[in-house]
Structure formats: C-alpha cells, structure tokens
Amino acid sequence: MFNWKYNEECDAVFDEYDNNVRNYNCGGFALNTRDWYRPYPQDYLCIAELEEEVGLEEGTEECVTHMLVEFPTLRLIGSEDEAKEDESVIFFRMGGGDFHFVRKGVDGKYYHKMGSSEAVEEMEREEVYGREWCYRYDGPLVMFAYKDKFYWEVAWLPFFYPLMELYGSDGELEKFGNSSL
Image 1 (cartoon, rainbow, N blue to C red):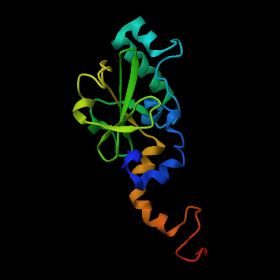
Image 2 (cartoon, rainbow, N blue to C red):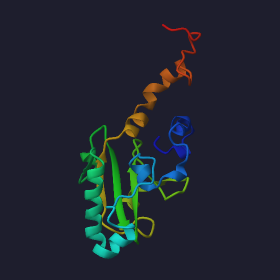
Image 3 (spheres, one colour):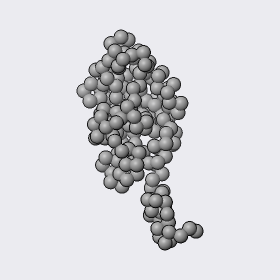
C-alpha cells in the first residue's frame, strides 16, 4: 500500500501533496519531507566531501547526529521490532560519495527512490540488509524508527475508504443528497 507508483487505489490520495516527485530525493521520500533532503551538516559542501574528509564510519555518525537534531521524532533502533505501531522504519547508508534512504512500508515491503527519479521502487529485504545497496552504498547500515504524518495517512486508509465513499472529494455527503445530518 505504501508504493503509490504501483497502487492505483492510493494515487488520488498521494497526488494531493505529491505533485512533483522530481522535487525530492530519497531522503525527502523516506522522511516524508517531500523536499530535497541532505542528511549531513552544513559544514560540508556535499556528502562526498564529508566521506573523503572523515571516512564512512565517522561520516555516518555525523549524518546520524545531524538527522536526530533535525527530526525530533526520529530515533535509532537496533531491529525493526523496536519500532512502535505508529512509527515507520527508515534505513540510511552512505558510500561512493553519496547517501541513500530506504523506507519500510506499512505493507512490510521496502521502498526507495533514487534522486530526482519519478520511480519509487521496491527493494528486497536481502538487499536492504546486504553488504551494499545499488552497487554503491556500502557504509554502515543505520536503522531508525520515525513517527510522521505519512504513516497515519497510509495505515488508516482502509478504515477511511467507507467514509470516502459517503463523502465526495469536496467533503460533501454524496449518498445523502449533499444534505447535512
């Protein structure tokens, strides 16, 4: 259900605030900022500079510290089981002078978006936990739990479908002749 690219049922819901997927990267997708997100301190011009200057391990630590400050509801976890019911699981990794994020959907599948690409793709669990992602991101794997608005919108959609049938897109009651109760 999380991957609106391949789920027609969710298209209309996500189109409302997802009008240009080229305007955000993997971080904006995973953290639901719908913006081009850079997970590293402003002291560095780019992630490649950070990686070159301090290496993958320390660079990852600096990025994690930076993200935890920027997102108050983001927290480190050691396993997916540590995420609460109202939290999403987000993965982060650096490597090859770049960074990448993966998000676990409420359907239990893993999704990611490459840069300004329009495609949101599924990633197999074995690759998420593998040695590297996309033949490039081979730094330490970091796992977060993240509470955000997006989780609730997607997780509760099945419960709201009956209401969506009663109410039109303008919020007016359709099955009752647009009269108020």
